[in-house]
Length: 372
Image (tube, rainbow, N blue to C red):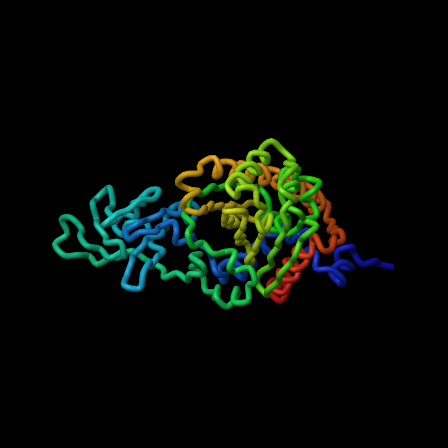
C-alpha cells in the first residue's frame, strides 16, 4: 500500500511550498517570467535625483548599465530610466551620482542631452541619430517602477499609504548585500514575527510584537507592530544607541509605532521606523542567490544635522539584518539537506505571527501552479 508523501498531504491543507521550489531551476525560470518580468519592477526613488540634471547610476541594475535622470518639465520632476551605455562602442559613461548638463562618453566624446538624444559625434559628417534607450516610469509616493504592473491599482486600498509618504525626506545612502540562498527565503523571514523575540534581542526590545496588526491586499501584506513602553529596556548595546537617539529627538515621547513593514509582492519591502523610511529590494540572481538593495531616507533636518541619529539607526538595522542572515542561511542549509535526500517537509504556521507567510505562499501558488 502506497502512502502519500508529507508534501502531498500538506498541500491539501496548507500553502507551504515543496522543498524543490527553492532549488529547481524550472521553478526559478517560471518565477522570473511570471513574477519579475511581469511585475512592477522597482528601480529607485525620485529623491535620488531631486534636481534637474541630477543622475544616479544604478550599480545593481545590469551592472550599472541603467541610470535615473531628472528631466524636469513644466509639470515638475520627471525622472526617467536612461541607458548608461554609449551607442558607439557600448562603453559605460557615467559613474555614481551627480549633476550633468550633458552625458559625454569619456572615450570618443559622443555627447547626449539628459533625455538621451545624441547631440554630437566628433568627426562624423552627419549626426548618426543613435539615441539612448529610455523608459518612462510609474511613480507611487516617489517610488519609481519600470515594469508592466499597475502600482496604483495594486496599492489603491493600502491603509498605511500615509505612513509611506516621503515628503520632507531626502535620500541618504544605498547598501547592497549579496546572499547565497533562494530569494523566497529572505521574504519568508521578513514576513514572520515568530522569531523576533527569541532571535533579535535588540529589535525585540524596540518593537512590541504583542501589538501586531496585519493588513492584506491581493499583491501585498503589511505588519504594524507597537513600540516597547518608553524604550526603557534596550536589548543590545547597538540598540541602546538607537533608543537614546529616538528619545532625544522626540524629547521623550513614544513614537506612534515601533515599525511598519510593507511587502509588495514579489520582493519589495518599504519599512517605516521612527523618522526613517527604508526601501529594501530583493533581486534574484540565480536559483540559490540574490541581492538585497537597501535605500535609506530621513527627514532633511536629520540627514543634514543629526548624523548620530542616522548612524545609530543604520547600526541597529544592520544588527538585525545580520541576525536575519543567520536564519536564512540556516533554512537554506536545512532545506538543501532535505532536497538532496529527495525529501520534502514543512511545519505548521504560528498564527498570528506567521500569517503573512501564509498569505505569501498562497499568492505564490496562485501565480506559479497553473503553469506547472
